[in-house]
Image (cartoon, rainbow, N blue to C red):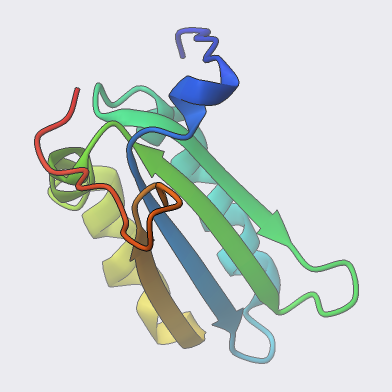
Length: 119
């Protein structure tokens, strides 16, 4: 995994996907391990700036993933990778809830910036 540093302004540019996952009872550690195994290959993708999975300290079945892509095309490319497809195929049966919400930078004028096609 290449080490990359971004300025705060650069981290606020791109296409964010916030994901909430709740594992089924007894599947918490399997989901945690699968999420951890996604970090290295996902961070190696050219369209990815950050891929950060978190686990709730108060509810071990609850996970939050913060994904930051260079643009919406980076998110689309991620969903075509083998590691993403394998995760979905093997982990969806272990997951009680999966919600993915995309976001783009807010510009303060009441509108979100378009992240499509940005570098």
